[in-house]
Figure 1: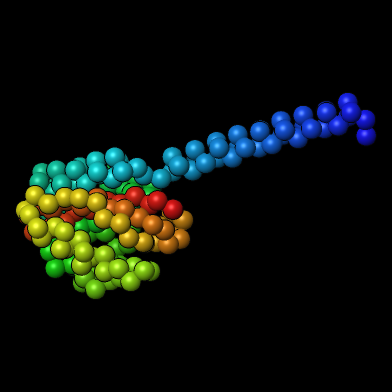
Figure 2: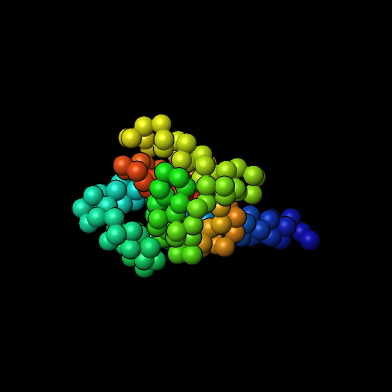
Length: 164
């Protein structure tokens, strides 16, 4: 192959590789938009707390459990626990409602609900982030997750982001 043909071929491969990388970056950006952010999870918890205060627990918890409602957005959903680890509302899995999950562990053996209860027991105004692993309802894969939690009276309100 002559130098000119080699140069054309090399230019083509570089251009094709750059275009392919650009398409991958765009695909990654689109995928990232399908995931909730930390700011969105925090806002969802604040919105949920305000909704409990305004509408009352029964109505609010029913709204949180509605998978097509205002408290479910992509992979974001609201969960509510009592201070003993019982699920009162769960936006992704209604089979969890009413279950005592205090002893539930993630794939690494972490007692993540027990940790939540301990974190939120420190103060009536407790709030903060917690890391663990959980199944993403969108991807159906176990992924690293971080949940923002806030205590309201005798309940814990949370919303998490998947980091996988």
